[in-house]
Image (cartoon, rainbow, N blue to C red; front, side):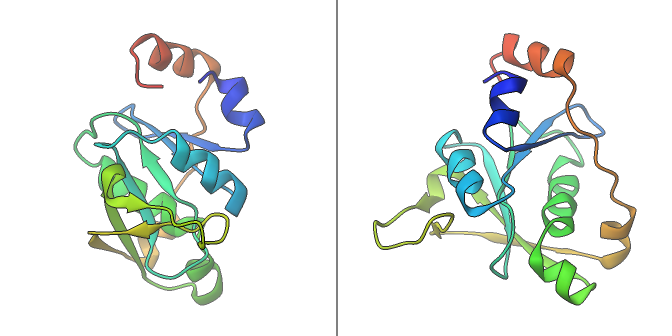
Length: 145
């Protein structure tokens, strides 16, 4: 998927400090788009409370990527916006998700998740780093996207 396709589908992009691509939804509809492209062994994050973007770490995460993705997930969540406090973020693999026909748009079930507590100070210090076209083209050549 090229940058223009990612943006036209409404996905948020972020390049971690280690150079890893994160994708996230912005709405229920873009969470559906995001979840449709996730591979079984890729990591997904979502806050414990409803009203969060799903965040996908593309490929194999490097040291610090899981924590940075959790901070990103918390930063754009309803939980943080409403409470301005520490936020619980769950992480799980693509293969651990399921979608029943009865579930509303943007909602998915999770069979097994682990938890990260993101401190308010980490959320406040988060700086978005949207992917640039050249970075996405290189990731596409590497088969990450």
